[in-house]
Length: 565
Image (cartoon, rainbow, N blue to C red; front, side):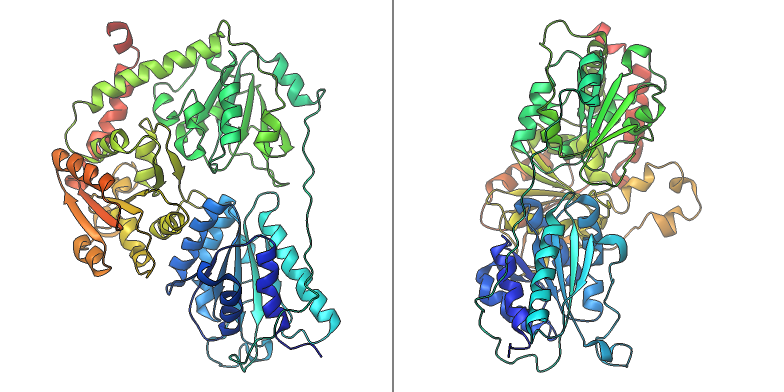
């Protein structure tokens, strides 16, 4: 007769043979059989992190680099619930993540037993799929069933748009008995992906050939050199304007990489600026201005290149969809020679040039503030740096400036501030180069347990911009005008970041002036042997009026500086 925990031993082996290499474990007792099985198979590739919320984001960061599912293992009860924010981020950003939760036997749920909650469907619609393994695998059918579930769960997490998948594992005591050895009947199901070929007579190819003005919009994407090369080639087409923010990792090839700035000068655009054909792919776009611009376009053909069957119409204008990856579609499109540029491309090139001149004139004269801080950071980071951009202010301010050849990561699936440091730590654990993590004070404080990690990567370099509260709310018209703003929205806090950082054993540096910022950034680039935090204290909540005046200056002076330059 087969051992009752044979499926636990096999679970670790099947996932290893499918290509999984990273395991993040939240310590517990109910998950003891899982911990022993995975540690035996994965060894030093297992990481133990006590805080489950932080552990899940750390795993997310690992998957962002590997593009393979990291396995998360928790004990039963509320431990599993703490995974939920990162599970949702993985689902909406499209990052493979495999969550394995130990559970009590079903007969003990709701019977006032320790660490027993309803764990089936615990993550709701925020996972691609959810499974429960049999409580024992003592016969041929239950053994086959467990193998089938494990293989299916793996393929769903990496197929089409990747995402999170949950496997619930009910376990009876005893929990610490010796696990069985592998059987000779391990069943690995392989999957072949057919190559997508865009037909020569397809609607997209026909529209592409006929169009005189084309705009390509890329949302958030993981780094992909093959796709970057294709987009660089297409951008040479004299009809094509590429809009790609730094989080797309295609910004090097883009005509417009700061749409929030470039599209700030007008509320209405002449016909020459309007594309006949629009193509969109990737995840979230940050800029509200590009969304408003595309939403107003009438009569254009909008193609969305989507990874699965869900219709995503961010700009409320999609009239055609293609289920495929962007690379397979773009490499099938003919590129017209880069001879005389179209009026469409000339218009947008001039817009970009005008805005850059006006932007430089304003930002070169401002005082120490959030805006100046992000300008200095953008000018100072290594040109090929790996950057993790925190949400709210950080990712937006960075998009206002030239980010050169840098690689960008950010939690833009759900855009929360709650796991930025933990995700960056997971990211750094998979890379040998420094990971520059740029976050605000609320993000740092919220996720400070990311530093509660025995194996905090030495290449994690945290740049903390402290404007003493939720600086982004000072920039929004609604929140800053209410009576509740100061006591309830601004989120002023008493955190001493020096003490907090040093409590976890990291190096700490402080600057509160432009000069000290530049000097401390240079030191941050030199230090190699320890994770560290550079706190930048900006005055008066980051001087939000300087940022508000920046956009007013762009509007007021647009078009005049180029002629006078």
